[in-house]
Image 1: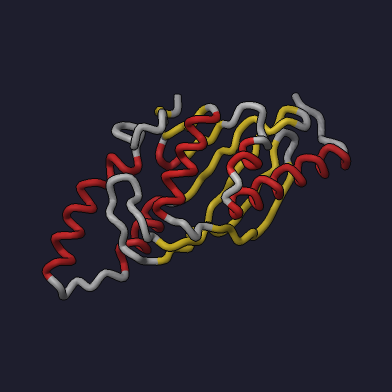
Image 2: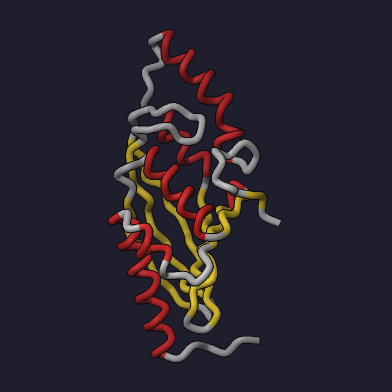
Amino acid sequence: MTSEPTAELRAIRERTVLDHFADEVRQDWDATLSTFPHPRYELIPMGVVHDGGPAVRAYYHHTRVAFPDQHHEMIQLRHSDDAVICEFYLIGTHTGPYGTIPPTGNPFKVRMTAFFVFDGPTLTCERIYFDQLTMLRQLFGALNFRRPATWLYLIKALRAVPASLGARGRRGDEARPIG
C-alpha cells in the first residue's frame, strides 16, 4: 500500500504534468519526452501501447499530421497516491490523414481523462481514456450526405477505421496491444 504523497511531492508531480501538457501543445517533443525517463502511452480505448522514445515520438508525429492544431483545455486536475488525474478536452481539426482515415477538415472536441502514473516523483506512464465514437462522430458528422462523393468517402473512411484505431496495421510506430 502506498502512502499519501506529501505536499512537496504533489507539487513536483503537478508541475511535471503541466509542463508535459504545455510541451505537447508547443510540439516540443524533446521537452515532452524528457518528462519521463522511459516514455510510455497507453491508449485504453484503442488497446494500444506506445512504449519507448521512438514509439512515442512516432505517435506524436502521426497525431499532429492528422491534427496539427491539437491542444488541450483543462477541466480538472486531481491527485491520488500514485498518479495525477487530469480531465480535459482535446481539441483540434482533422486536416491530415488519421492513420488510414482521410482528412475531413472537421473540428473535434472530446472529453478525456489521463492518468499520469508516478513512482515517487518520476513519471512512468500516461494512460488515456476517451470515447472513440464521440471523436469519430465529430470527424464525420459535418459531411454533406446529399453529395454522392460523400458516401464514397465515408465508405472508404469507415473501412479504414479498424486499422486506424487498433494496434494491427498501425502506421509503423511500433504500437502494440495492451496486455
